Image 1 (tube, rainbow, N blue to C red):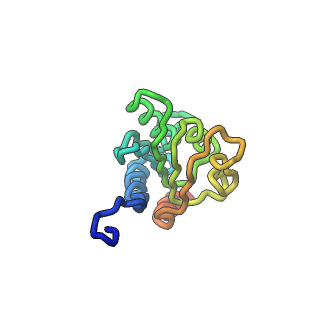
Image 2 (cartoon, helix red, strand yellow; image 1 turned 120 degrees about the vertical axis):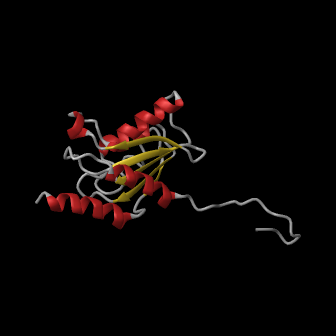
Image 3 (tube, rainbow, N blue to C red; image 1 turned 135 degrees about the vertical axis):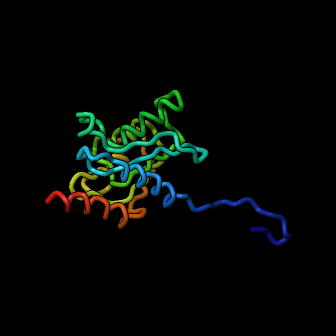
Length: 164
């Protein structure tokens, strides 16, 4: 891109690599063990585009009620950065975060929450609740939903279809 004099102008907008990031979260979801955990995956992307944390559901595997993919990924990112404040980071997850995970993202001060499939039963980023955009929230990250939605939803539909 250049101006009328032919001088290159700075790029003022670039499409975020959300679909690529969701691919990393899908890889985590597919890696859920045979423990019976729901195949949900998450990654935390740093300000420079680097992966700071990876997570997948481990509630069944570890008997941990907080073992959601988002919490695991946020913990890893905090450890990688040496701080709980994840400013400039993006939390990317295959399913719309629940209230616990949306709250954790808000309290971790991530800049953005990106997710694939919507969760009409427990979603807290626009479906059932909207914690990140609640005017009373201490921090309000950007929310981008529906990225690679069909692929993310299919993974969950297949998982639950096998159990019914």
